[in-house]
Image (cartoon, rainbow, N blue to C red; front, side, top):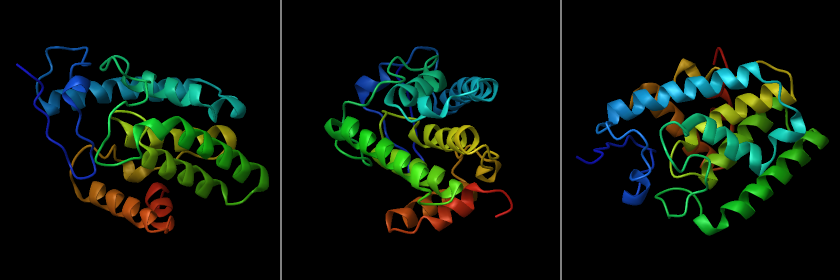
Amino acid sequence: MGLNLTYSDGQTPLDEDEKEGLKIKSITMQKELDEFEQLTIEKAVEWTIRTKFKPEKILTEKFIKNLHKKMYGDVWKWAGEFRKTEKNIGIQWTQIGIALKNLIDDTKYWIENKSYPPEEIAIRFKYRIVSIHCFPNGNGRHSRIMADIIIESIFRKEVFDWQKSNMVKADETRKKYIQALKDADNGNILPLIHFAKKDS
């Protein structure tokens, strides 16, 4: 029996060969997959809380891939590897390495020159990396944890609240999040910053 997945608005469907990368063959339904992924993501979050990251290590391709592997490595064989297929969102897969290097360089520039407030730098990074869509799946959650690591380890500020949601369920919170991403697509980053912050 194959993997029967259903997708919410804004989620990226997996190709058949990407589905083949599932390590736990007993998983057949979306709900089971979500539960297993959530467990491994929680382990990755614990790792980020326990570990003191050097700021210069965070903004590297190696760290970005390693975080994705920590988040999804128990579930997917391709965790931590850039996608090699085209998706309904994101740039051409052949351009991922270049686009990510540009984002890392831009972010370093923003930090050095204080181009934006700390929260905005972290959220601009989050938005750009999710737009690149580096991995076959898990880009949204990966980008949110990256924003948390940037705000905490580089700027020594509290992590984002993200409306206390992991955005897996297709509920009102997820709708607000998707709308904030669409606003950012149109050049307005403020709704995404407000969404991420506490008391907003």
